[in-house]
Length: 507
Image (cartoon, rainbow, N blue to C red; front, side, top):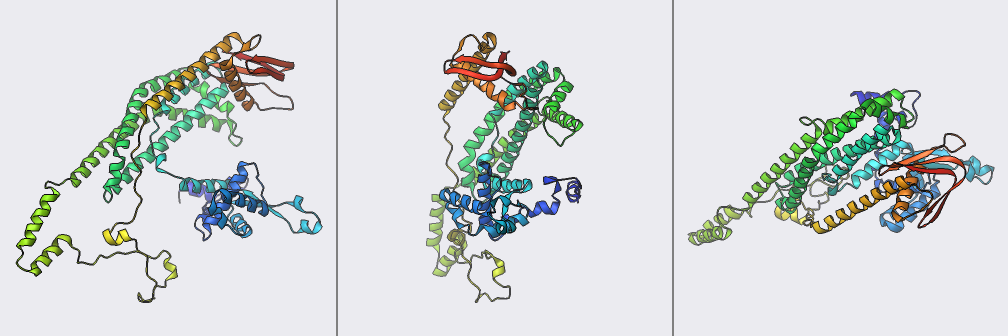
């Protein structure tokens, strides 16, 4: 038993929620995926997920049945769900759902004694459901290298250095958290991509047309990723050094100070953010043994492997003698046969159609057929026509070649850069001239509303009075502080009134 398994088996007496689940409890969460009514369980959990998205946390059996019916209007497969009560009880026994009593539905004392049940997702149950949905929704498009993320990483590193130098703890927390999540996602995408290449190489042994249908898109994708990675690697290393020069300890303390995880001590949060920063340094700043260098080497190796596989497939499909010449020689052999027996023997040696084809196909449910039942009495097994004729399992054809619209991509990129420049210019104008005593134009109004959205979303009242809140973007900071009366900002869209708040925009 590993240390992780032992930790899951030994649950602290003070633990609650997902920490109270032992290893057996967590494994039992996936029973619904292998049960006989697994499709009905899945549609019922999807109905609970839809209710959760609409802030319907506690659901009665009738509420769950109503959500399933509404779900069946868009997805006919949900109509197969029958009585939801036994399904709810089974999911509650497996601890995917939490079952509690609801006395508010009782109209009299008798109904109250009947103990109406209401159900909701447990935290571990929702994670198990999402894990199954992730597997069911996995597609080949998920296995791709993220090339367009490098400019965002570079911008976040520069913003991190500026925020740390300015002492903006909240901005340091946001940028470090975003960098950590982006790097984690990029590592997972790269791992899935290289696994996909291995699967494609194994599939080529039986279906080379699948590889030939994807080779152009694969080579172009890997070459573009390698070029972008090589171009941004020195810039990213320089940005990491710039951020580190503002003070690593100060940066980690700022991030730990703004961290809102309740069940982590200050020392644990400090160590966690220090490790995340070390991961960023390992990715970009360590040139010889960093993750960037390893990722580039792995991509170059993958390109060589794909080219070698392409050469092997091409040589296997192209013989030294043409097909027409082979058939002419074979026809001459047939005409040279002295008897019909010799011709039949030659036919059997060339085409091999006389020998029986042995195929082993199991029953869909082997437990339905006892092992002692004779072959003459057992039900036959259904075979696919392609399996009998060619010995190959039936499969779907691969998608067509990806057509890239380079002109459209360049146009969209130029438009994106233009909008970013307009936002930066408007933000600089807003910070220089202020938001009061004039009418803000359309670009300045959009920047002001975006900053207010960030500031109001980050505002957390500490008491009955509203505390100050701030938000920063594009190099400017908007601060909302409590004040007497109201503040009015004049824009081209109209007048913006803030009751009890004072608005200030600074660089």
